[in-house]
Length: 427
Image (cartoon, rainbow, N blue to C red; front, top):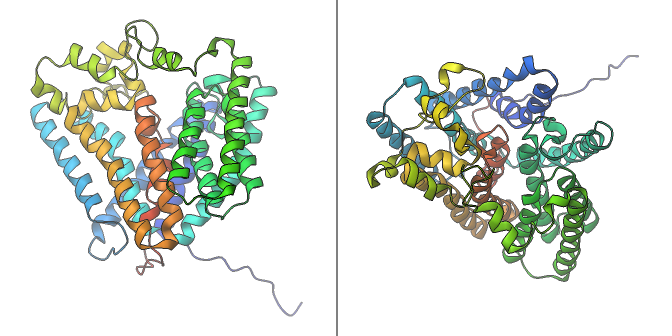
C-alpha cells in the first residue's frame, strides 16, 4: 500500500492525565485491594497526583483564569489556617497533623484542579464514562451477588467485596442517578435511558442493602423537580420513579426481613438517633453524635470550638505510627464511621462550619452561574443537588473521606470548569 493508515491521538496535558488517574483509580483500587491485599497501597498513588496538582496550582496561580469564584480558594485557605491554629493549641505530632491534612484537604485540592484545568469537553467525556462504567458495575454486582454470593456491605461491584465497599457504590450511583434525572428533565436524555439507569440502581441498592439510597433517590427527585421547569414528562418520571422506589424497598424487605419497617419515621429515628448508639453498645448514633461527643469529650465550651486538633483523633490501617492514642482509647465509640463526628472531634464547631460551609458555597454560586449562563444550567443543577446530598452523606457515614470523595468533588466542580481549553498547553 502506498498510503499508510495512521491514527491521530490528541496529546493530553499532564493535568488531564493526573486528573484522569484521580477520577478513575477509585474504581480500581477497592476491587484490586479486595482481591490482592498486598496491592492495596496503590491508593497512595493518588496522593502523588493531587500533590503535584497542588504544585501546579501554586506555580501558575497568576495565569489560571477560570470560572471559579475567588471565594473558594479563600475559604479553603482560611480553613487551612484554622487547622494551624488548632495545631498550635493541641500539638501532639507533626505526623498526625500532616496525616490529617492529607485525609481532609486532598479533596479541596482536587476540586480546585478540576475547576482550573478541565473544560466542558472533558466534563462531558467523564460523565459519559461514568454511564458506561455504571452498566459494567451493574453486571459485576449481579455476578458478585448471584454467582459469588456476596451481599450487603460486601457487595461493591467495581469497588470490590470488602466490608464497606457499598459506601463507594452508593456515591457512584447517586452521581449517575442525579445526572440521569437532571438530564431527562432538561431534555438531554430520553425517558428510556433514565428509567433503565434508575431501575438498575434501585435493584443493586436492594441487593447491597443500601437503605439510605432509596431516601437519596427520593431527595434527588424532589430537588430536581424544584429547580427545573414544570413539564408533563417530569410528572410521568416522578410517578414511575416513586413506584420503582416502593418496589425496591419491598424487595429489600423480602431479601432482608430484619429491615421491615425501617422506612417509617419511627424506624428511621430508631436507626439514626438511638441512645444506645449505632451498634446498640453505647457508641455514637448519626443524629446524636455531636451531642454525645460534647457530653463525653469536651469539658468546656472553648474545647468544643476548635476540637482536639487536626489529625489527633485519626488512624491508619497501613502505618501504625499514624494511629493516635485517642483512636486507640476511643475507637470503640465508632466516631470514625461518621464524617461529622470525626470532624467535630478534631476541629470542633468551627471545623464543622468550614466543612459544611463549603457545600453551601457550591450551592449558592452554582445558582449564580446557572442564572447568568444557560449553557451551564444543567451542570449547575447537578452540583446543587450533589452539594445537598454531600451534607447528608457526611452525617450518614464516612465515605466522603475515602477515595470515593474525589467523584463527589468532581461533580461539585462542574459549574466552575472553563468553557474553552487552558492556554498553558504545557500544563
